[in-house]
Length: 248
Ligand SMILES: C[S@@+](CC[C@H](N)C(=O)[O-])C[C@H]1O[C@@H](n2cnc3c(N)ncnc32)[C@H](O)[C@@H]1O
Image 1: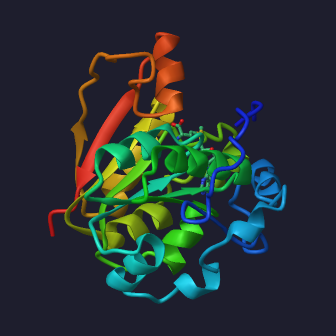
Image 2: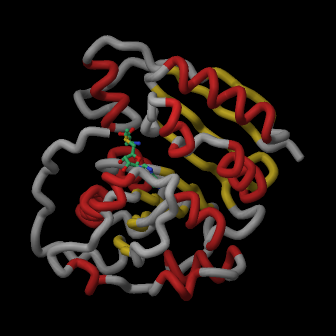
Image 3: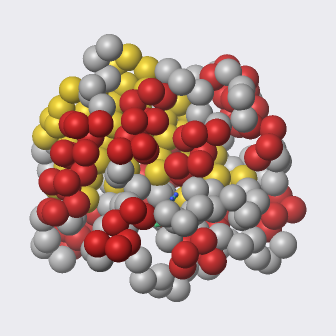
C-alpha cells in the first residue's frame, strides 16, 4: 500500500497502556517489506512498552486479558488497523468488550493507539506486529468473540499473493481462535480479493457464511467503519462486505 504522510501524533499523551511495540526480527517473508521497514521503532517510542512480547505467549484467555487490559471481557481482534478509525470508535462505543488491534506499520499502530488514548478507551490496545505471528503465538484457542479484517492490502501481482493476509493458514488460525458464535468480518473494495478471500475461507474452514452486510448511510463525515471504507465510499466505489460465523 502506498504510504501517505500521517497526521501528527498528539504529543503528551500517555500511550503506555494503549501501545505495545514488538521486536522486528521476527517478520517472515510473507510480510510487506515496506511495512516491515516502517515497523522499526522510532522516536524512542519503544520505551513505552508496558508488556514485553515474550511474556504474552502460552497464556490462557483470562491471563492474556488481565495482562493486556487489566480485566477479563469478551475479546475482539483487528488485523491491520491502519489509522485506527474502527478500533478507536468501536472500543469507545463498546466498553464492555476488549479490543486488540494489530498493525504491522509502527507509526500507524502508534497513531491508532493515540486515538484510543485520546478517547480514554482503556479497553483498546494496539500492538505493532505481524498479525499472523500474533495469532499463532499470542491468541489462545477459543478466545475471540470477533475477528476483523477490513481492506487488507490486495497484493495484485501473482508473485506477491503469498503476502495476502486472507490466506489458508491465517483463516484456519482465526477459526480455531474464535469462540462458538464468534464472527469473522471481511470487507474490501477489491472484488477479486473479496471473491478469492471468501473462497479461501469457505474451503479452509468450517465457518458458516458468507453472510452479507448491508451498507448503511453515514450519519456524519467520519461515520464509516474504517478510513479505507470512508475513502472508497467518498469516491463512490463499491465496498464488498461479508461475515462468517463459527457454529461449532
Ligand atoms: C489497506 S490498509 C487498511 C487499513 C484499515 N483496515 C482501513 O480499512 O482503513 C491495510 C493495513 O494492513 C496493515 N498490514 C499489512 N500486513 C499486515 C500484517 N501482516 N499484520 C498486521 N497489519 C498488516 C498495513 O500496514 C495497512 O495499514
